Length: 313
Picture 1 (tube, rainbow, N blue to C red):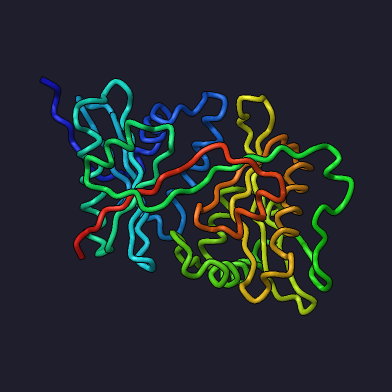
Picture 2 (picture 1 turned 60 degrees about the vertical axis):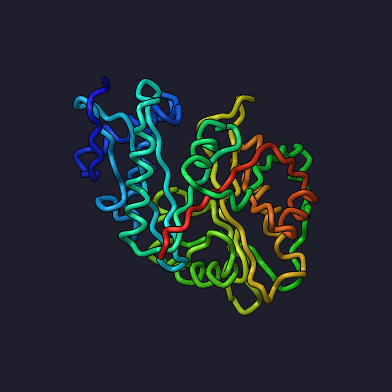
């Protein structure tokens, strides 16, 4: 008989052990551990993360065997959960216990639904979510782009007249970016409005404000942006990997080529930062964005499935 499993709330004294457990579950390489550890701490310290209420630990015989994190988003009436169990503890029902704790947290928060994101390669977890009564509600596409060296020789997508690009300025642009982002993504699947404090936290977590490019009109108003990053850990090709984290344009500015020009500028920026390949994720139902990415040369390489369960009010 397996030893009893205890599910409890996180404390900051648990941080290193929780990270090591997550690293074992997700396969973080030793060479990347310190950078990922720093990002994980910054994530738990973000405004609204409330780690003491939203992070949970599975313990067995005094060892950490699993963990779970809830992202509670009252503004869009949902909570998003992620959870994992170390390989040696699989098959004991620990995943079910962690998922039950995440659902309980969603009930406590009073949100309507609980959602979980599952990669297409994780067939075990997909079957688990089906058995747990979750419905697949959305598919996001994973895209990859490999820029040619000649790409940097000119403006691949020129900005419309009167629109200019500049780097994000920490301490000055947080409110404008939050307002612009909230307007651009209002009503989009999974988007919860951000505050200037949250934007500042995300920038600090990434540690590279210059990786955010701001598009503004002739009056200096922010009308679009592209948020990029470069990871030190390489993909199978051995190249540095860039990421388009998020990009958007005000609804009033769409249809002018601003979006494709801003994304193209982000691609050039990542190429200059040493990225040999560039990844992004896009909602499968966002047909206009998918057309832009296809036109720019992105290729689909995978999918992520969103599962949802009604919390019954």
